[in-house]
Length: 444
Ligand SMILES: *Cc1c(COP(=O)(O)O)cnc(C)c1O
Image 1 (cartoon, rainbow, N blue to C red):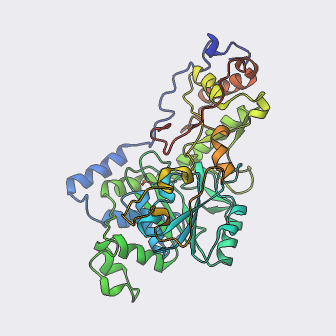
Image 2: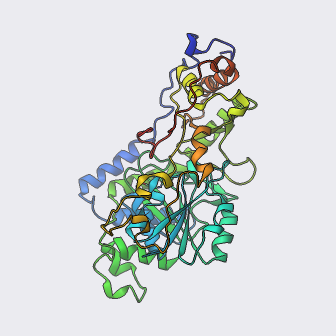
Image 3: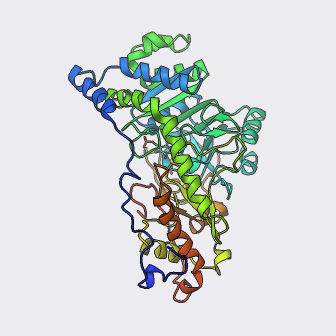
């Protein structure tokens, strides 16, 4: 397919013509996963913990960590990690504004508040240069998200955290198996928490897990929401008197169909994400030198990788395309047969929940319910986060290295970019709001 063929938007042939088969099917489920799930049902052991404990042990070994604790979802793995780190009433947690809500909102269940920080426009992860001036005597932790698979710049973040005696919670929900300078993400901060739900790259169904080398974080989280192991797993003296009941009043036990599938998935995970990595890098190779389009990935050869390239996105540089709006560009690519969307997660600091909602009946907004100052962050306060939607778009997330199919996808992106001048007349510009609060229903 040549790039100067007429755009499909104007009646030309579509770039996408070959059948894509199981190119996007995920997770990859074999008879081995099916047998593991069926065994749990037949044994009636859905609510047990024996399989989950084996999964935890194998998961911890995989990441070379001392402890792994499984949860019924990723959101609760973060809540458990927050409690584990000692976050409580009146504390402040620094978190990037561009992320899925579960990186931040669990803080409010603990009576803490969230201070949002800027993202770096290249990595789209927490900007290390926008943290230190937000630290106060109340700051307890920094949440780092390896956003859309890209490892965050951990070295300067860890240096700031150690200097100010803050905990670092890595949210690894987008990047299981990825590396930052040769270290697995999730193993660098004090605790690495993550979702393992069915649409993530490490996908086992509803489920989450955290890893840590800190026995106290592990035990506090067990005490908070894993009543069934309080007696056996908690040795910390100040926690022991309360054995038997979960301190948080929460129940976080993982469903054993999830952990049984997780044990099988783990065996093949590195191999499968290596293939994704090869496929996605091949895709970007095909677009090298095309104006307006840049990969969202760490520089090759730095020891940093994208893990499974979860919800993979690209950078858009409208200045190289005569100012063509991202919306118009995506429309042209969609007409070629590729379902992509402009934007990413919306900036959390602008949601009404961060401004007005009195969730627990404090008589004032929850974000400042226990805070010693007004933490609400108005429009205009985080300019990179507020403008990133016009510069990023979703990509096809290839699960297999099949060059002939990837080529036709690359052709669609290339064709629309090289013929941008055709798209300029009648470009309505971007709408006010692009992206969504989650990726399940973009635009909501
Ligand atoms: C999916 C996700 C979570 C929450 O995980 P669930 O399993 O859906 O509860 C947390 N953080 C990020 C960044 C996520 O994308």
